Length: 280
Image (cartoon, rainbow, N blue to C red; front, top):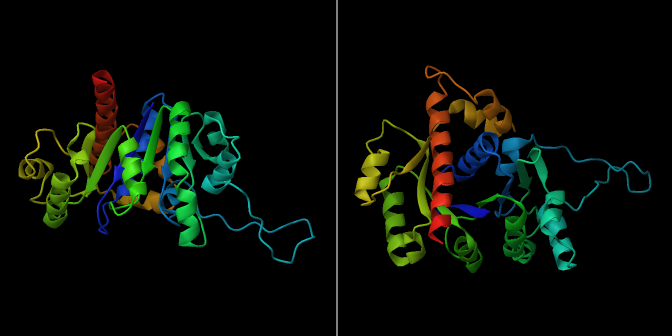
């Protein structure tokens, strides 16, 4: 049982959410793990959109409400928060507030869809309790945490995590910025850290090996190449179908490099967690 958090610094797009969706889905298919995937971001439906098409609001059918009124259900974080505050939450109960991707393999806990940022800040304080409970029920909890380090909420999630995966790009400024953060924030120097480059371009001079050399790292940097078909699947709610379709892929297939690297990162995460567990 472990919490794996994907983090990035600043406003630059690192494909963090798409990377976590790919890795969690592949992990659920290739391993016999029960996995929870969740995002702590504000009003962000990117993760949800990777697995489901945007649903149309459901109309009330009782005839008692105003015409065109919308039914609102207590689901996701909002519904779970009420249960936790009433002291009725149990580790098993968390799954009742999730959406299922693969039964008994991969659940998604939808992000907070609050109408105001103040309400979001109030609700997000419940995440540490959710992670503690989920960690007792799920084998792996994948967290797509907010960018940056500008709040104790983010720091608390990172400190609670068994493994932190920092998402970078191949831009030298982003790499330099993280190196400066790493010198200041010693938690990024611990053994429970990995680096991942999303939308990786193997033709860039900033290859994984060159970046590792530049950062004076002994371990190999993980990458996920850009894939047009995967990117389209993320926009169409078809990520699960994509990985089932390409579970086995011929080397000559255009998606071979992408699938190979996702599987490699998946295995490294699994190995790293086992290694960290042995060191406890």
